[in-house]
Amino acid sequence: MPDTGFLALFLVGLLGGTHCVGMCGGIVGALTLGGAPRWRIHLAYNAGRIASYALAGAVAGALGAASLAAGKAEGVRLGLYALANVVLVLLGVYLLGVVQVLLPIERLGHHLWRRLQPLGRRFLPAQSVAQAFPLGLLWGWLPCGLVYSALASALTAGSATRGAAMMLDFGLGTLPNLLLAGMLLARLNEFVRRVAVRRI
Image 1 (cartoon, rainbow, N blue to C red):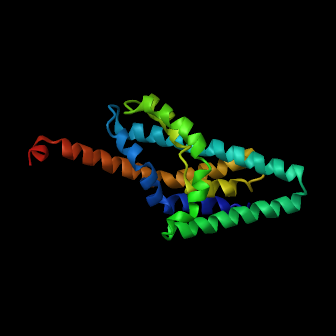
Image 2: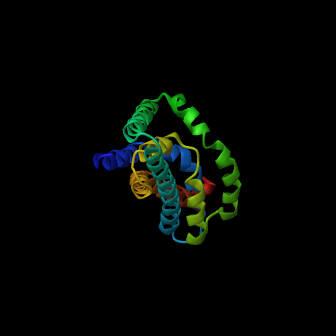
Image 3: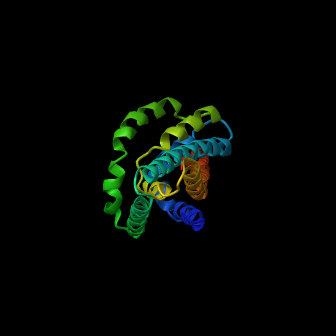
């Protein structure tokens, strides 16, 4: 994939931010209950989440590279590019409001997520960086069409390292929206806890 693919994945993460807030807003809200400085909690959570994306990207990149090595390279390469582009088109349709279009893709990860989700409960509420980071690692595997569309592009990366880099880039694109949402929810939480507000 040309280097413009990195910019494209960053923009997918950045411009798909409302989707990210909708998917992860609940967990981000739970982070605001922690006792450590909130920005550290949010950074640790997001670092864990993005690390999971990079790991998934490494796996996708390695699978794509293995497919190229096992088959006729040019035919496999074209097939992977076609798959990545179809999924990106579906993502565009999804972001336009046709939500159901990525639901079949999101269902692929539900089996794994059912096993991982209960493990996250032991880290809630995240009161330290040591709790927030593993929570992010787990929540990085939440079934998400936006993430899966980026992973389809990582399949074309040609190597595990490049696949990880592409998903890291995508994850960094999602970071501003989720950090902003987390800090706004923290401010709202502080506001509603004020005695005067509660009395009103």
